[in-house]
Amino acid sequence: MNFRKYATGLLAGLTVTLMTAGFTPAFATVGEVGGLNIIVDAGNPSDGLRYLDMTYSDGLTLVAALTAATAIYPNARLATPTEFDDLFAAAGITYTGSLTASDGFSVGSSSILSSLAFYDGGTLMNQLGPTDANQTLIWTAPDSNSASTTTRDYIGIFASFAALQQFHLSPPNARFGWLIVSDAARHRPRQP
Image 1 (cartoon, one colour):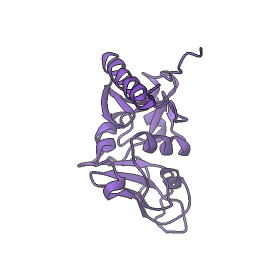
Image 2: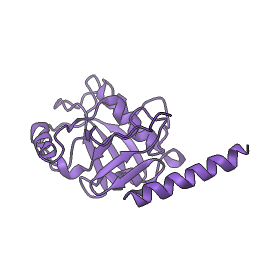
Image 3: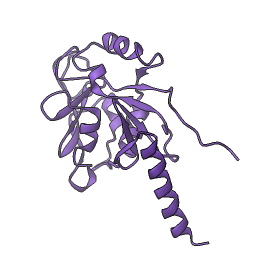
Image 4: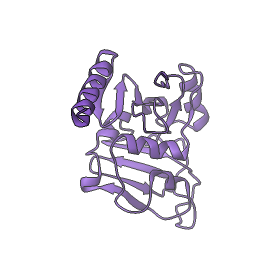
């Protein structure tokens, strides 16, 4: 069996299947359907997880954002640190250094996560939707303290790079949103 030919055919079939199901392939393995971004990657721990676009949370407190999201997706919740990493992996973003997206929830100073050839050119920013003038700013652990001895406050996803940042404001702030997910559409391949 020619594995390369088989794998190419399988990938082509998957792409056609997703497109006919309403998915528009945007980048790597994150399908975009309306206001949802769905991981379509059997090797990803968050395969099938729906990431809501930023319109559900932009400028809102976490409670208000979850209220808006659960009105449509009853099981909507805040993404876990690991799910931030899974989204970056599915979007084809690799890290420039040792820090990952989940480090946005830990203590430390601002730092670049991904840039240049490691980055996706802003595709994920466009999929999630900008929160402020060509950037997507996502709260992680806002604590009203921009000191490097406290937690990082947000992940900034820009056209040419992604970064962990510290800030001095707390939500709500019209330039920021929350990464909210919904488990309802998780799909699993049928077992033979």
